[in-house]
Length: 221
Image (cartoon, rainbow, N blue to C red; front, side):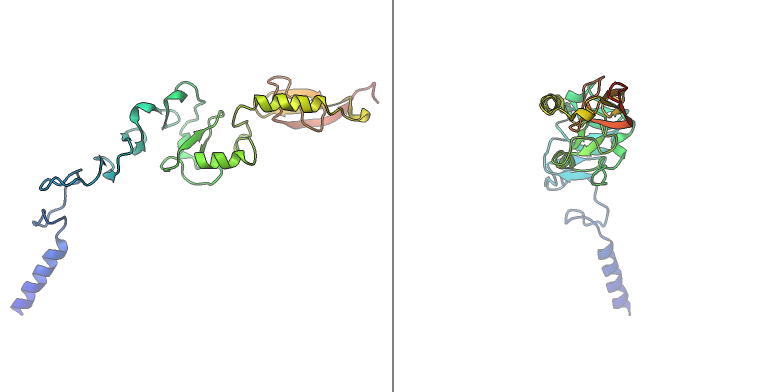
């Protein structure tokens, strides 16, 4: 019985022991980048806050984000209103939406703030995963949340101008007008109806939607 109790005690002590061979006292390991005894490197990058070990990817810990980001740190700044780190070329040049990174990607519905996939900031201020943004552009050009153009469409609008000019409407539609709402500037205007699109009179965008009934001038009636 005595031997059995000793064996059980030794077995229990071994099960309680934590750490590597250099920590044979049964104490917990201190999280750090190298072993205090043999200087073995546990990770090229180590964060003492997140206790993250990783290969060197120019990471840095952002106190405001609460997580480690892939850098280099000098290439990014933390926007306090958006509450995430953005590329330096967006500083003072992006539309802020409070805590926008805490919203899920509107395309895949997955988390953006802690995602390993880079975020794409749209002109409207909404965020998408970079991969989701690239997939979206294969199907359309508008933000899935607010319908504003997700990229510079001025070249496409000039091409649309040419197409409209080369495609006259039938005589019964030539004096027809319609009220429209522009998704890009939120302006309202009354324009001539055309099957290829209605151009905003304010910002000259074709990203518009019908906001009223069709009307035909008295002369035409």
